[in-house]
Image (cartoon, rainbow, N blue to C red; front, side):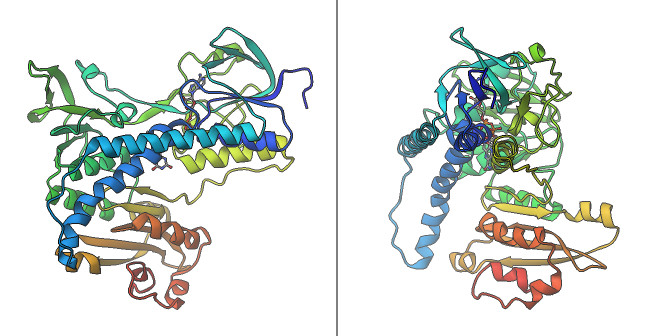
Amino acid sequence: MAENYDYDLFVIGAGSGGVRAARVSAAYGARVAIAEEYRVGGTCVIRGCVPKKLLVYGAHFAEDLQDARRFGWEVPDCSFNWHTLRDNVLREVTRLEGLYEETLGNNDVEIFHERATVAGPNAVKLASGRTVTAGKILIAVGSWPIIPDVPGAEHGITSNEVFHLEEIPERVVIAGAGYIANEFAGIFHEFGSKVVLVNRTDVILRHYDESVRDRLLQISTTKGIDFKFHAKFQKIEKQEDGSLLISMDNHDPVEADVLLFAVGRKPNTANLGLESAGIELGRDSSIPVDEDNRTSCPSIFAVGDVTNRVQLTPVAIREGQAFADTFFGSKPTRVDYDTIPSAVFSHPPLAGVGLTESEARNKHGAVKTYTSDFRAMKNVLAGRNERSLYKLIVHVDTDEVLGIHMIGPDAPEILQAAAIAVKAKLKKSQFDEVIALHPTMAEELVLMK
Ligand code: FAD
């Protein structure tokens, strides 16, 4: 260990990747410090996955309460109290923040609650003015929501603010068509807002399988979410009554009470002092790293969203773990980026793993596809005309299942288990050998002919 430095490791950013790397490195015996400029836990815990998923649960009660009547429950007219949900979610976030701090403390990681920047290959400058030194520096500063360059953009909010709204807006415009945009479209719609989703192209969720995306679009449209495609923003004006008038190409202007930008996230690398260590940014403002998360400066490393490889929490955590194992645990480890499952917590949710049908066709030529297009038993009794769709993509010659894509109730929960089979390169015939677990939705996975 580098005795002549203040620390063996200094981590900048206490989010998913940084906390894992700090905690595990310290458990291996390294002297570790971590700096956090906002709240320990990072985007996922404080203003991402966790509060979002809790809002998804909260929102889904709108449908559950309605459906319950078809199952014999006499449900009185229910009203929704946003302040109760918001405050409970924020309290849970604070509880988790405390647990993260506690874990770091239990592992003897020193926490600096302030901004830190790089001041040289082995030096970090803290906002309070102090400079500390470390054998290794790990940059895990995450990413930041992109705000489009359009007149009046300052009237919009991002996912950073959305969890703190004073009221649920009557009318909300969401810019973007990725997972965050579609998730919040579902959340606001279930809370009773009139939702308009505005996108530059006519493609939503472009990394997901086309059939599954089309199904979400069809269900969302039927529910009343309005999609405006090929709609580039022209300007956003604040009107006298406080509402917004949003003008866009190819469509009439739309009035809204809240405009949520969900058009992507860029690496959080502004003013990070990287030039002091000779590190140049990639074109997307990310920090380029090699397979061991090492930057062009041998003592400086980066993990998570800031490297813009895959912007997902479990990936940032794996990278943080691999970094700690490799450099402080004498267990050289590299992250395997192949076959990463992912999900969209829309209403209904969708999930996918492996190749989409078009990716598989591009890669392998012909492929076999198996689909099951069905109405979940619960939806049938509830009179909810919402069909699920499961799809397997199979290699023509080897019979290997190359991808699984699904939309329907609990799709992400089911897909996590099915992803093991795709990662293990199991064959369709092995799926067929499994006896169905009846009655479930997941049984469709072993019944497709
Ligand atoms: P972060 O978790 O963002 O942590 C970076 C930390 O560094 C932050 O706390 C920041 O304050 C701090 N920081 C930045 N600069 C400095 C500095 N100079 N000094 C000190 N501290 C600094 N992923 C999923 O897998 N599933 C989901 O369902 C999901 N939902 C999401 C929903 C939303 C609304 C958003 C915004 C993201 C979601 N994500 C989801 C993505 C996930 O949150 C990120 O991929 C993940 O948090 C990245 O981890 P990280 O360690 O790279 O960065």
